[in-house]
Length: 211
Image (cartoon, rainbow, N blue to C red; front, side, top):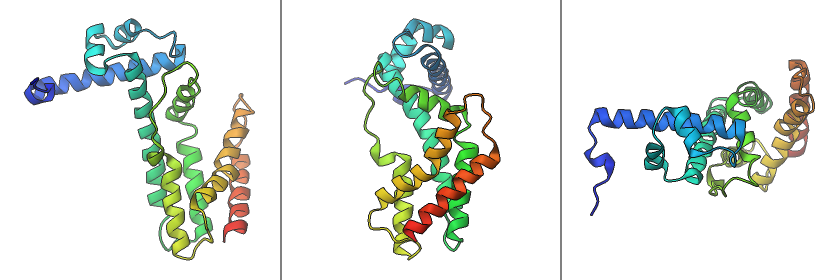
């Protein structure tokens, strides 16, 4: 029976392996975004990461698995942002309107303008040519918000019969409209006041329906 590599690696060797793995992921992410999945080769990724092609295969097996690992890492970063915003803004005892406004403001100032979010959208837009990604529905950002909305309903803060549908409405009225406004103005001229107006109108419309 083969012994797992992690079982015999020394701490120093393990750190070097982790450093190489991170370098491969960074290089792959850059190339998948700039060149697309189909046009990115394992040779190019190895060269960008300054490792051998064999090292890439040792860590990830093949290009498909490497792409999935890149997407999962980006997903995890976004999920962490959403989870932190939910925990720190949608707190018990806080005025619900203020909490929802602060939550969306935080995501539109931290997540949407970030390179991580831009990478997430670019990688997911490659769905036609890239390998099928694993279903991570139980960890998607909407699920985190769905659980919080269900608790707010249980506490009497919201009138919600279907938390998932409520989250879909909330996102459509706020985040989706902000993203649409940004997408429609590639020059980046959407002002903070315009974004704030979209957010405020969306939160108020949501609360009229669900409070």
